Image (cartoon, rainbow, N blue to C red; front, top):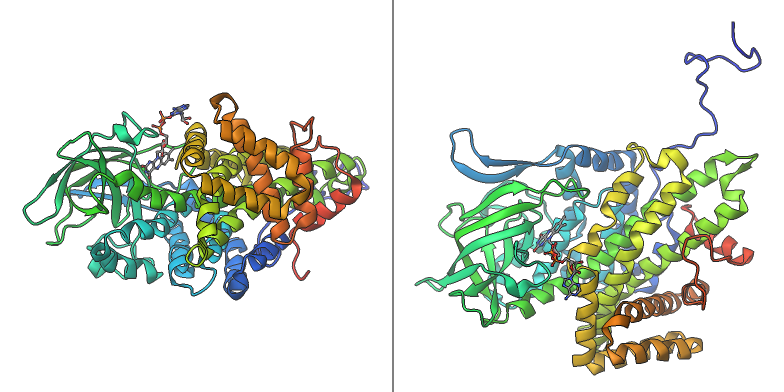
Length: 553
Ligand SMILES: Cc1cc2nc3c(=O)[nH]c(=O)nc-3n(C[C@H](O)[C@H](O)[C@H](O)COP(=O)(O)OP(=O)(O)OC[C@H]3O[C@@H](n4cnc5c(N)ncnc54)[C@H](O)[C@@H]3O)c2cc1C
């Protein structure tokens, strides 16, 4: 006998499913994202909209979203030896990883910045932003491949060989010498056991060879994108402590033999699980010098400036993924007689998350725009010089609390592994750690500020141009910044990041959001949790409208 005859029975007996949402799939992650589409167009990317729209549809499709899940659930495996006991130092991936790599590379994620006549960096950032919402782990090898180009260009004969294979926008997963491959990926090997942030502690030694190449011996403690076709690495020539030099270490030697780079084990990571991060032993590995001897840190910083943009983009995309799921669920779930999206306190939380997410996305797109304009406009080079580390510090810091808050908006179903939120949560702190952890980024920023007053001036002009009503706050942040007091350094960088985000939103056409972001985050008594800012109802409505994923607006 049914317990309650008025409730229709189903095959599942008492288990009637109602008041549950559905997976956020088959939504075009570009077209339906008003904030992203507005920012991309304002940042000069209108010419890439068709590509991004096609890519947004793929990235949001049920199939590609499932690839992301599969690539994470089936992490890469090291195959150090073949079955006969010969070293091969290869990594085996799930087919879903390869499918995601092909999707991203063939759309141009690593190449478009260097091949598009206009707005290439904006297109790159937007592609990475969309791809990250399917799976973040593949973003790392693609980001390093993109970012290696300016460093490689320091050595034109190496760039000539490798850049065309990056520009080809092809994924070729075969482990073969690069000249036999349609496309390549590259990585970066800086971190050693005794020093990560403090790269000058690197002890890898480079010995010059008769043919002009170098042999590198040392141990690299974290090397991601472990199946890369080549790696930029730092080493000391003859172990000379006076300066590090930058080298390019290909996976295969010119004579067609495997280079002496041994993958000793893969890191068992908290997140980023589809990406293979290895410990790499260099045993007289053949390498070419990149840039001048002893100027390795400056050379590799060309690369790091670009990977830092990608940390901002990746963190912003992780926030967007979490936010989209939170709003999506709130639109479909009811509690206490009302949809969650109509509950006033939930609206405060969601609106506050939209504010944070849009600020992060605007920073990413504005830095990409500065990179795009930097050939023609030296002021943009100066602006990017400070804006990149400042945004890297702030946006990466905000990702984890944003994901945690968004996860809570889904209640218990946000905490289970079938939801994308746990994966996003584990990924969220990573962009803060690599490419300069928080304190190191702040110290870098302070150094730039002291050595390059013209960069501070460019930033001040940018802020005053777009936030003229905030002159007092801008002055206060800059004065504190100029004094370079270590105790206040984080606070100064934080305030500047908020102002830069506000100015970027205003410049890129989202004025109400930019002003609200600055006023809210720099309020004399700023709220310490999302939803506690007591935003005006009209602003809440506007923010939720901007933040909800909807096509055809
Ligand atoms: C998943 C993953 C993948 C990675 N992939 C790569 C890769 O592909 N290539 C690569 O080269 N590296 C890679 N790394 C390494 C990463 O870049 C380093 O972990 C990072 O640079 C920090 O270095 P560390 O781990 O040695 O920490 P440390 O340098 O020991 O720093 C520890 C903490 O101390 C702080 N700190 C350091 N100096 C100061 C100071 N003067 N004042 C105040 N605080 C300070 C730092 O900010 C940090 O919070 C990867 C790391 C992870 C987690």
